[in-house]
Image 1 (cartoon, helix red, strand yellow):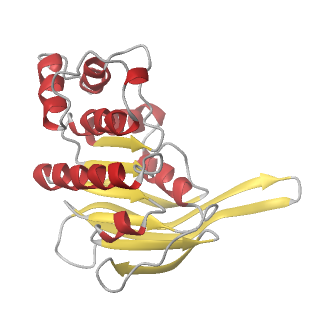
Image 2 (cartoon, rainbow, N blue to C red):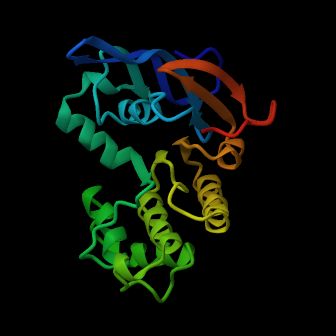
Image 3 (cartoon, rainbow, N blue to C red):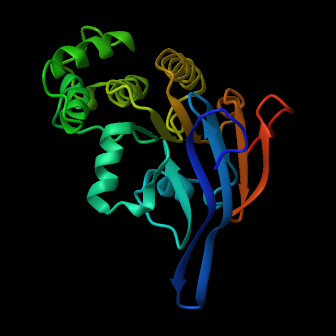
Length: 241
């Protein structure tokens, strides 16, 4: 599957997604190929409606393609049934979302420890969650519920939740989309610091050129097709509408 000897964390081949509409078949994604090495990072960019979030959902096994394959650490994702894909996500993946996706009635500590419980790591989950919250700068705020935390603090909780299980793969959908520029920049720094320290493979969707430029490579979509795939440092990224 890989064209070189560098181990790959995630490979997609000829991914296609179509949906039925009243007027016929709508092609959401068409013939998408990508490959991310272990510990590498990929930004998926493009205008709204280009298929970015759909592609991320397919890579996570949250949705099924109309055609194509995805391998996660060599495991054929779509050969697994729904329970198998859920087990793989719990064991190997972390997620960060634009709207944080925190559970409102749980405090920060239990939002983070829940990820460990789901992954089957209940022993000392509260202590590990507490340590991770301190790592993202929220020591002393463990018992605050999301409603009393700022947007930046909520995204720090989300990062703690995503990284506390030491996932092999982290998928992020517009992680700075609901934050102001200064807060977003701090979250970007924290995201890549944690990714580097844990050796996590990162795939993210973003409209933010600054965030995309921090990744090792960029995949740009337009109308469900790959417009270009580049090393992030090969040329400046334009602003994305």
